[in-house]
Every structure is written in structure tokens, then in C-alpha cells.
Length: 452
Ligand code: HEM
Image (cartoon, rainbow, N blue to C red):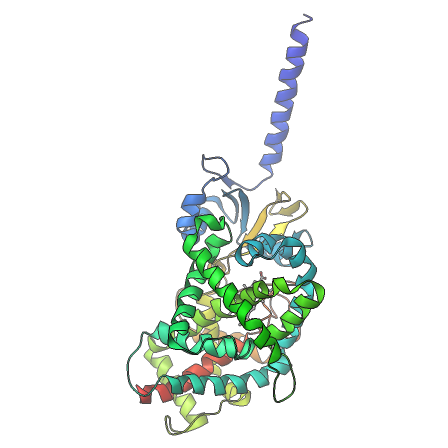
């Protein structure tokens, strides 16, 4: 009897613990964990993440957890989860991305946390409504310069053409002229390294650099380019109004609060943030428009009515002109809807309840703008390119369509979009910078068509 009692106590204790854990797990969302510890379903998920997410949603419902590479990622796909993602104080943007920022740009956690809010406020201000008019003028000038450098004959893959135009234009405006290379060999190298860095960015944010040799080489190349260029970038002031470019203002804050050695890393992050979404969106907008002859025809007629006959003179595009070309704006937004980021993320910092489940601290809460934009409940006939659906959005007041989430949401949504008025889920603001770029590019493609 004396021997049995401790045994019985241990067994009963284990049973109680097991039941407790079971109960706790019952309140957790369904979990897809695979059978390999730590790796979980990392390989399947890594191969085709978007397909994986959609299949899991169909099988497990509106909320589910995926275990991969040591991360617990809980995906939310409908209203209640989206509201928590955007508004709850129990989830945090900075905690979710600091690891990614460390791996991709070598910015230590303490530096990132010390600087993030200050930098965000500055970026949002500099890319706000007041400065957009100035950007539109600069964009047209820079685009003309790049178009002229292309010469008058030849053919080029559209994707390449857009990159060749928009990489230097964006960098010259947001950083200043001394960063983007001017000789052919260096330009080619820039394209190769930026594309390699961008293509494997997701892997770079998850895996040790030693496993990604080419990606790591490109990251180093870009960091070195920034390091070499920073003295010139800082020295060059605006002839017109002495204002700082986006990168100059960033470096100013980084070097005042921390030290010079972090400057190239912040330059790299800004470079990636400004090119990685905007340039593909410009390409896709052109591709969608060109493959919809009725839309193309209507756009060209609109352009001729605002600017006159094409190809005869350098077109100057102002914000007021662009306001008259509403169809182009709809095309840009419709493209952004269809080509939206795959996922955005927040870290759960306190247990949070969604759809009667409790999501534990430490989980990454994930939301997929890509799939949200393909939900027929919010966007009827979601797979179709239908610019006219944007007629319903009150763009004058900078309101997007309900559930349009391409720029993220909440406190730290993308500062590259224009910030004005309210910014709740239904009253977000549009990325005029991107819109200007793409719109000006289409306008200039009139000239280009005549040239090639
Ligand atoms: C179509 C083009 C663009 C799209 C779809 C896009 C999308 C996004 C998204 C989804 C986020 C994360 C927001 C969140 O998690 O809530 C973000 C953040 C950011 N974007 Fe954009 N973006 C675009 C263009 C730009 C441009 C042109 C810039 C220019 C510099 C820019 C700068 C940034 C920065 C700096 C952040 C990080 C904000 C922070 O750290 O708090 N983006 N963007």
C-alpha cells in the first residue's frame, strides 16, 4: 500500500496535467504541425505558401495554426480575426518584424526598437499629401530622362523595361542621384543583386545566411554600395528648397540616435521597401491594361483628351491632370488588389480570443491580403481584372474598398501610401506615389510607343 500510493499519485498527477493541456488545446485553433519536431510543415509550406494557406482554410476553417521552422503562425481570414489583427493592443508589429529586420538588414533588435517609431513618423510625414505634388513633378522629369536614355529603336521585355525605368527613377528621387550607378556594367550588377536579394527575401528572413550563399552575396554587395555612397548622399542638398530626401532624413535620425554603422542597413531596408512592391505593381498594371483592349483604348482616349496628340512633345504630368484620368487610378488599385502582398504579420503578446479560440502569446498572427482580396464576399468575381469596381470607392476622400488590405493596416500601415483624413479599415488612403509612377509611365508609354 505504502509503495502504491506514490505511484498512484504520480499517475493521477500526469492524468490531471494531460487533461489540463487537452482542455487548453481544445481552446486553440486547429493546428497543422507535421511530424518533424521544430521543422513542422516548413518544407511543404515553404514550397508554395499561398496554396498551402488556401488549402488549409478550406480544410480547417477561418482560423488555423501552422507550425513551421520553429514558428507558430496563426492565420486569420475573416472579420473577427482581421479586427483583432488591426486593432488589438494584444498584438504587436515591432515584435513581429524585428527578427526579419535583423536577418535581412543586420539591424540589431535594440537599435530597431529604439528607432522604429521615430523613423515611421518621419516617413509618413515626408510621403504625406503635402509632398505629393512635389513628387509628381520630379517623377515626370526623371521618367523623361530615363526614357530618353533608352534611345529611339529596339524591343525589350516589358518587365525589364519597367525595372530599367523605375529603379533609377525611384532611387534618384527617394535617395538622391549619387546612389544609382550610371555606367552600364554597374547598372547590370545593381539589377542582378537587387533582384537576387528581393527574390529570396522571405527565405533570408527565416534561414541563417550561411544556407543562402547567393542571397548573402547580394545583400553584402548592396550594403557595400550604400556604405560607399552615403558620404555623397549626405553631402548633396536640394538646390530648390534645402529639403532632405527620404534617405537623408532617415540617416539623420539613425546617426543622431545610434551610430553611423547602422546607416547602410537602414538604406538597404528603405531601398527594398520602396522598390519591391511598387515596381512589380507598375509592371502588372501595364500588363493588365495591355491585355484588356477596351480598357487600353479608354485610357488612351483619356490621355489624348488631357494631353493632346501623343509623341510630339514632352508631356508634363501634374497631380491635377492625373485627377482627370480616374480610370488609370482604378487600374492601379485593381492591380494592387490582385497582386497584393501574400502575408502581413503581428506578434501575439498577450493571450487573445478570436472566434472562441485563445491564441497564446508568442504566436505570429498572420493575415493574407492576397487571399482576402480573392474572397467573393468582399470582391465579387475576385479573379477578374475589373477596374470599374473602384467606382464605388470614395477616392476623393481617399477611401479604399472595404477589406482592401494591400498596404497593411493599424498603427504601422505602409507609409508609402498617401496619408489623409481618417485611417480606419474602411477609410484608408491610397498610394499616390505609386499611382503617380504608374500613371506617368502609362502616359509616357504613348511617347515610347512612337519611339520603339
Ligand atoms: C504598391 C506599392 C506598395 C505596397 C503594396 C506596400 C505594402 C506594404 C505593406 C503591406 C506594409 C506592411 C504594413 C503592415 O504590416 O501593416 C508596408 C510597409 C512599409 N512600406 Fe510599403 N508598400 C508599397 C510601396 C511602398 C513605397 C513606395 C515605399 C517607399 C519608401 C514604402 C515604404 C514602406 C515602409 C518603410 C514600410 C515599413 C513601415 C514600418 O516599419 O512601420 N512602401 N508596405
